[in-house]
Amino acid sequence: MRQAAKGLIDGVFFLRRACDSSIRVRIDGETKKKAARVLDKMGLSISDAVRCVLACHLLVAIEKTLHDQGLHIS
Image (cartoon, rainbow, N blue to C red):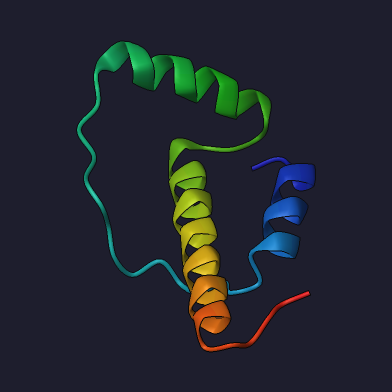
């Protein structure tokens, strides 16, 4: 992973944990190739991108839960 992308991921996703589980995703080959090319230019792997998406969804879910409980993140 390129240093700039790694720094961005480390800065945004502060909940870093050891990778001890896996996810299998079925996708057509052409989409996988296109995604890999774009992500490579950003210094990311497909696995990095999936982790980023899942972490973003987790943060959104946490924020929504806090909002529903009357707490707000500014």
